[in-house]
Length: 251
Image (cartoon, rainbow, N blue to C red; front, side, top):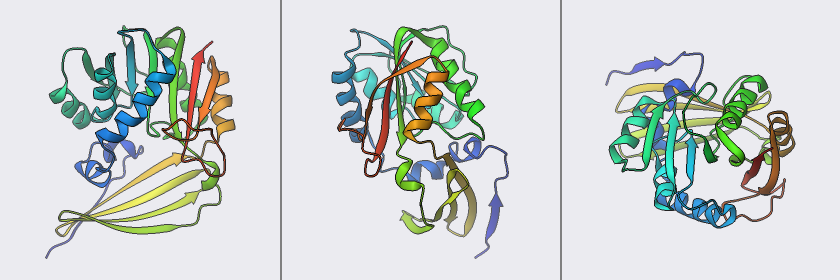
């Protein structure tokens, strides 16, 4: 069987990986039920006004957007991936709108009651200047006293991360992944074998701690209101929490 090796060398890894069908295959366990749990808990906490307009920034195929809409909000979803936005649009109903834009430079006429940046859709970039650009764009699109929900990985347990290898079978596709710490990032190298066709992708997420995120937020016009450690909204504990889920208010 012929093996074709295709390595994607674009300077920004997410431009190809998120637009690949293999991304959605590898992470298909991230389902609507998980989105419903997280966002229902957040709805009770945030107490947004009835019919609030919210932005799902880094919306992917729209699973969080659909849940937010079902909870009674008017939703705009923005993502860099044309394929993901096309999928989200196919399932959209009135009160949902999806746009292909870069979170570092997005523009929209709406000013939102809240912005949701979920499931570590942040910290993909090479510098804190780009992280600040994202937060400044969010602040510019929030109403006064609007809320940001920044759902990030918990970096603390990963600071001493050792290399991990894993093989995952999804239907006829085999994924070989290697996850390691490189400088101040967690990098996952992904080799995809699809019936002899071999593709390589990578992921890189900055190891931004709670303190790093709080500093970035304070530098871009936000005040941290709460920090939780998981989608059940339990207290954040640096050594053991699954997530670093920050609620911040535009100040």
